Image (cartoon, rainbow, N blue to C red; front, side, top):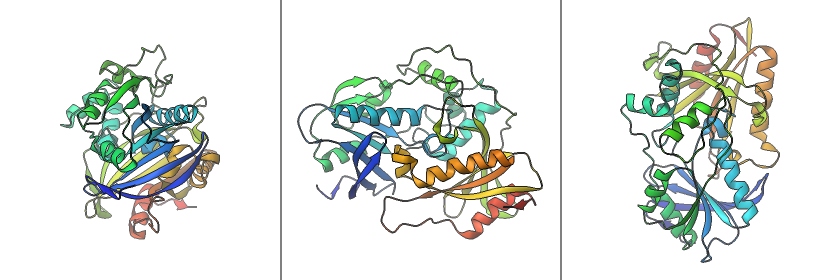
Length: 354
């Protein structure tokens, strides 16, 4: 395999044991954005027959935190299952949170939608923020195909006609398009309805939307008085499904998003329950590879699910969720202890931490 093509450099490959069997995950890094690009493959992807493929954009809230307010984690799991059944295929995983606008935009989008009582759609919120409906780019798919020796046209798993056109514009050939539809739930039916109205090939759903457990207010970004380098950019309600059990009632957490003005790093605190005399706290590593439904859930995801259950049983708790680079050998979490302390202290508000 070549080492570099375009703006993509190959980092190596490893076996990934998922609930759908073993895949080989090829890791790359974009030299401009500095973000990872993953290609999760099964079988020989270099043969001439059309290659079953999914081009998937990251969604940390559903794939790592266990939220149920979108269909992203379901689509990722369904794509891996389809590739496993076919015995040959590939899932390209691109770090393009929030349809390419980033996590902060995504968090403010959800806040605006919830503060409007769902009168705004996600696309309305993007327009209000001055963003295009979809800012994703797919050049990395063509670069990765070149590095992996993929010459066959793709049988693309997508419901989004806009993605098809954008991928073809990069020079990647598409042989056919296959739908990847999952049944809506009360937590994501409004989001999926908005996608359907925007042109996604999704059926209309008669599912009633779940009400929010509390009102959400729209806030302007503001620095924390106790830590001015940290900018509070959004707060909204996140329905967390411990263990990914979509049939169960969600546990509603407040998601508080922050931006470090010096480093540009994003930080997320999830808080549960009403203030009391004490609160449970956890600093939770969020590894990249455990987003792929690894067998037995993965150690960090199992601990997160256990923490959610413990928070709920105790009645309150908060967690600082920090990205963990488990792709690059030797990488370590970059958050300073002072940032961890400032964010958790703000959330505790003087309560005793356990």
